[in-house]
Every structure is written in C-alpha cells, then in structure tokens.
Image (tube, rainbow over all chains, first blue to last red):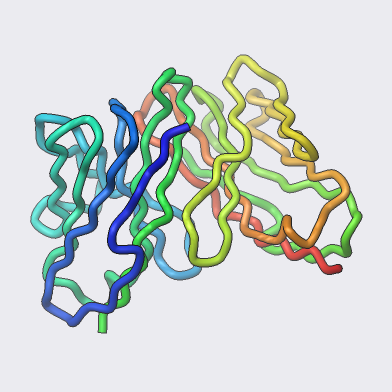
Length: 115
Length: 112
C-alpha cells in the first residue's frame, strides 16, 4: 500500500481566504483523487487529479473554487478558495494501488474550520 | 446514478459479540467493492477489497461477502473488541464511472 502524507493536518481559517492542501505519496501513482467529508457525512469526490493536464471535476465542484495541481506522479495540491463556513470539512487525498486492482488508499485528511 | 446505503447507521454491542454490517448498492455493474474503517477525525483505512468476480474476502476477524446480482455486501466482525469501535464505510467502484462511491457509514461502538 502507498504511504500518503497530507499537510496541513488541520487549520482554522478566516472567511474569504484561501488554503492549499498538499498530498505527497511515497511512490508514483497513476490515479489520485480529492474527496470532501462534511461534518457527519460520508465522502464526496471533488475531482480526479490528472498528471500533466487539468483535473476532472465532479458535478457541483468547479475549478475556480477548488483549483488542483498535479505536477508529477507523487504530488498534488488542492486549494479551497474564498472560503466560507460551509467549506468546513475534512479534505482527503486518495491514490490507487500500483497494481491497478482498483483498491484506493487515503491520507489522514486535512480538517479545515472556517470562521 | 449509483447509490450506496449502509444499515444500521449506528450499532452498539458488548465486547465479544459477532456482528454484521450491511451495505447495498443500486447499480450492480461494479468493478469492485471496498470496506474502510474511519476513526474519529482521521482518514480511512482500507480493510478489504472484493473484486466483482469474487464472493468473499477474509482478513483476520473480518469477512466481507459480495452478492453483486442483489446489490449487497456484508462485513462480518467476529469476537468484537473495544478497539473495533469506529465508523465503517463501504464503497463501490462502478464499471461505467471512474470513481469510488461511498455509503453512508455505520458507526460501531463496542463496549468493554
């Protein structure tokens, strides 16, 4: 399984500001995803981070609000822009298994609180 | 659109009991199903992965079954322990879409 490191692990942010979350994987992976988990809810996919091209966003999520970078096969960032209290969530980075069994692994998540 | 439901939403049992968590999904065209554990405020830990061609997978005290035709999976936990207390999530990867769709989760509490 891949070892996934996310930074920051938690942060308290002011309304209107932006925060960038980093995801570092210990090996090269093809599939990398960003999920959001709102308080008391299950996980919702924000976007698939594609290496060398623009991310693929799910319905309800847009690039202006959640810009994503994927400069190489081991690293990605998710920015939460112009934050509001409704953005208070855990944001999780996920990667696919290298043997392409379809198994996904998750980082520890980044817990954001927006005041 | 794939929808994944887990029953019960919460479960409280005394230590030592065997228990079953249920997961159902609406679209049987899946590539695999995965069970995860999530501790409060933490990320997800992968427990078991069942490919669409498989009927069950086992890991220690955990056994997961898959009945694709009926859209159901169960996670069986034998001889439960307080350390098993967590939220358990099932998720399916559909053949028609490149993403994992998560269930609503079952919050398990095992009392000493």
